[in-house]
Image: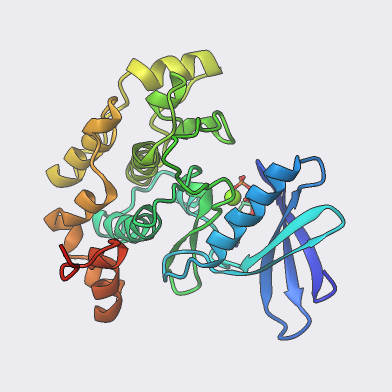
Length: 289
Ligand code: ADP
Ligand code: MG
């Protein structure tokens, strides 16, 4: 921590503290996440270190950059870029009821999808998608942050941790104690899209029991007819109760009205890299039979 000066605590998240700091080296602001790992078992500690190593490798214009990590006095510290523009949740509340234009919503949405594609293509789940974990940079670029509880997907389908953090984004399968999967991230993505369209949560209730009931079977108030059929139809696909019926992030990005916005946010080189799936295959097209 001696490389940084603490400015103030900005939050107490589901897995630790968030502290705004200034680096002595360059005067830049960063956010440091403090995670207490002293009470963890050796196995869990190792797992957290491995996770952080994975996160440190994520580099994408729409993902909050992780700068470094270190351990001190039983805590794991993750240093990431500070997003001065604040988060989408604050942006939504600042509207005071005035709806966003469809253009604005879709420009934000496609950037969130590009970030999610980057991690899903690498078999990593976000697990905590919510408007408070989606940031805006000074120039208005969207950045997805807080992969705090993301875990590398393993084939033995580890039972996911449930009920972490804000419950509005819980998917029907999590409410029913089924494992978290990539489509649970898609449900949460739907919740964020709904929030951008209505400035409200799709599923709200006075207590957990009623919230769960609404999520697994209740309707959600319709979005304004001012928005296009494409957008409203996409929402209903993201909110399919059966995770298998929800589109993957790649098929969302293939939809015409979304796809045409991609080039506004990624350079041609990045588009080639991100959309060339061959790099993830063990054997290329020229592999020996
Ligand atoms: P939560 O579990 O609610 O996500 P966090 O500790 O992650 O809690 O965040 C607490 C607050 O700090 C939130 O309001 C969030 O917007 C803000 N915050 C978190 N990370 C950053 C960041 N990299 N840049 C700017 N603000 C951040
Ligand atoms: Mg957060």
